[in-house]
Image 1 (tube, one colour):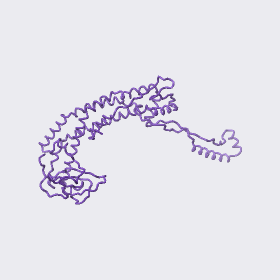
Image 2 (cartoon, rainbow, N blue to C red):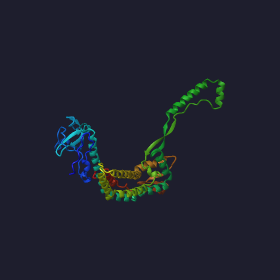
Image 3 (cartoon, one colour):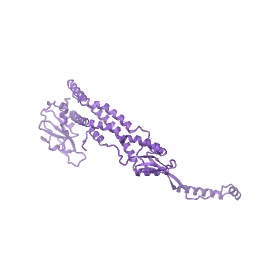
Image 4 (cartoon, rainbow, N blue to C red):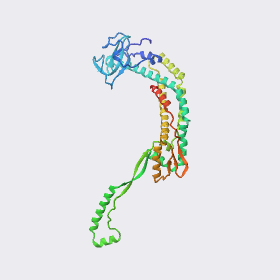
Length: 403
């Protein structure tokens, strides 16, 4: 067991060093929380007298948001909290204090006690994430290498080129719809314009009233000139744009960088990151830095903890980019669903700006006047598997990878 740390006495400015004295291996074996604070061994109801043993924040508990009954606080003397800390003041003595009552017992020193605990817990979480990242990295890296050159990813490039060549006007129309209208496909729908009919009737009544005020000679003159009021002839109609469907494959109809090119860049970024993920490199740096801190009397955790988190951050950023590419490919594949293609074909064939003649054939579109002009996907074509990506992301973020 680590050497007994100094006592943090109220007002003496000393900081308890128990948590800082634990090795990484010891921290990984620690349970920082409890689901049964009232069932802990050696629990006393009141704050025990000072016996010289350095107090530590040993565990925390948090039942806020649950229907659990309140827990007794040693400071308050009655059940008053759902969240708080287990304070260990002896090898066999513990007591519970609410999350906002610790400073009332230990004053400003409680901030240090709590900070040590939180720092140790955070560092242990980082270590678990680090070990999880290392254990999953090799398999994920192999997956990424296969992904960026797999047929499903390359099909995005090939089918886009084929589509543009086989159906240029349709491709252009879908590109405009994707860029300007968020993928919404519009057609003009003819509807009765009741407002225009009312306005026309009101205008006719005004003109007729003015006509009746004219002299017979003026009426005769205007009649010869064709200026006599004419009653409106309803019904009136107007064309309004109607959204017939919204396509999700916006990237497929844009000039954005192709998924295989982006994934190739991400692969190179992970190659650069792999050197930092090497166990010996970072672990040795952390160890040397911690030894240097100890020799200089510095009690804080190694600043290289931020190196872990920087790698977590970089990895998550790259994983987000992979997610975007996989979503683009999934949307591209879903576009070739026969139901969606049927709606697109109907839109293209009735749109005056496109006036296409396309038919649906399986999972593709074919020019009705030239069957050689076609673009389609195989019947069994499916997007790449996301499971390795999900597993690695859960490892990077310290989640259970078995789910």
